[in-house]
Image (tube, rainbow, N blue to C red; front, side):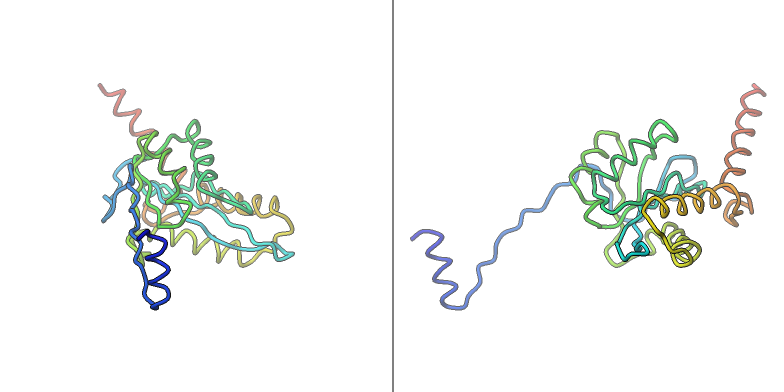
Length: 207
């Protein structure tokens, strides 16, 4: 008796055949509490926010934050952002800011994609997946997304995707260069980075 006939008989009797689902093996991920960053490029966080244009067309924005210096290296808005889109953004950041040792993400399809997994393995970047139903595992990016929504997405009507990109980029620059952060001693991320660089130069010159 072949498998097809067994399945047909099971269906006739109202029974179900449980199919074995093979679990994917992830090459570059970590689960559990992520370590607190103590230096530059140790840990970033990524997430997506959703909004729509004036004509009702939906779009998404990839948000990225460096958890040590509270800087957002890039915000990417588009109609269709996939795992390959995330990889493209990270590759654009590579010559500008470098890459982090690890990135905290949720279980969205873009972050679970084979494209991002292969890229992370190739670049030596560890993907730290939050626990399902635990947004506090990625609280810093959730806080950033809240500000992005309250101060930008909810107060502007975007006529085009280019208009949305320009407006979102203006908020990113304000966040990095103008807005003081209590966790940085009331410095902006740009000021915090500048002071750290000056201290490293002074320490190097003292030897």
